[in-house]
Length: 262
Image 1 (cartoon, rainbow, N blue to C red):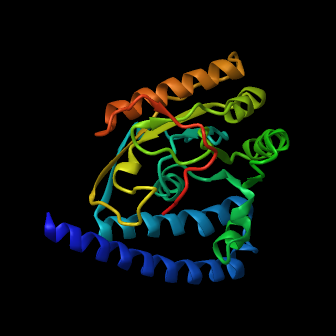
Image 2 (cartoon, rainbow, N blue to C red; image 1 turned 90 degrees about the vertical axis):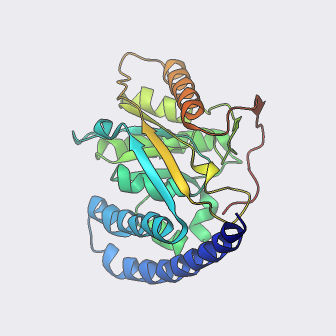
């Protein structure tokens, strides 16, 4: 136990130093190469490869492994899917592009201004929103999301809107369900327990195996926004409860931000 308390911070520090250096290198290379690639190929080059490096580096250096359940549900038919995922940490933002590609995320506009990372992120045309302008943000998600789906690019949304600690929940926003309902796009829900090993409130990573579960495909042609949202929220919450060591405490989060992020 004492050895782990010493090694885990050292391993995490090594991981962050390596990832920071690789991020600068890969973002600069992405600017040179990515602008010449069509959007889907650019997504694989700029995002997917980078995320492969990130999750495998975390696995090899910090011991953060993963186990995937429901891999047979990953889309192979060329359609654009709406992906609704549990959000507990940064880890899933690295892992999901490696599992379901190509996809873009609905992200807060502040990320655009991050040196290197934000500039490279802009190359793959994510959906940047201002969370303080909720009405306008919803319009952006519907309009731009529909365009991505028509091009066969999946759209990833974290319906809780922020990282929620293990054992807690937040009511789902209906934006992703509305996008799926209006675009008649199929839906996949994604549950995981990443926050138990990649905590949001502390920079040190814990060795262990994150469990990720992908739902069966839900066709939305005959479903309302409320029905899609209710199904996704109930499925994700129930699945997270099944796979997590830390069970639901009964506490729901109301804040728009979860504070520190690592």
